[in-house]
Image (cartoon, rainbow, N blue to C red; front, side, top):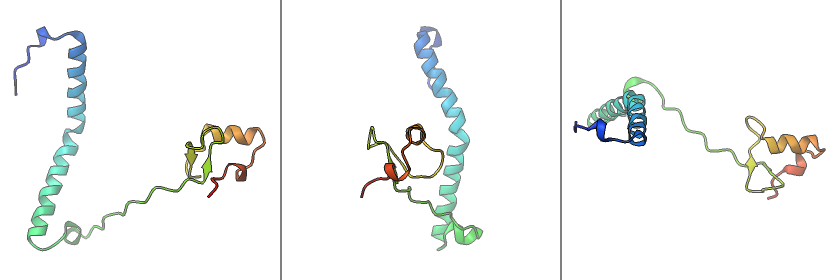
Length: 107
């Protein structure tokens, strides 16, 4: 590890260094787990298996992002899939009397 002369650093540089250290500490265990998992997957591959086959654990499939169903009339690039919390623009449109069909994305 390189010696850092902390006394020669400015306050801004010290705070940046502190943020980097906090980030490195927070991700340390995750990085170690990823490394261990990679080693195990490689060893399983060498033996002709997948790690899922050896552990009996199925890997969950990732869902594709939901398609946009509604668009903000003021900014059509601002969309909502209809899942999760309603965006403010959607709720405000409902308050002024628009229906969900009025906000549907036109295909």
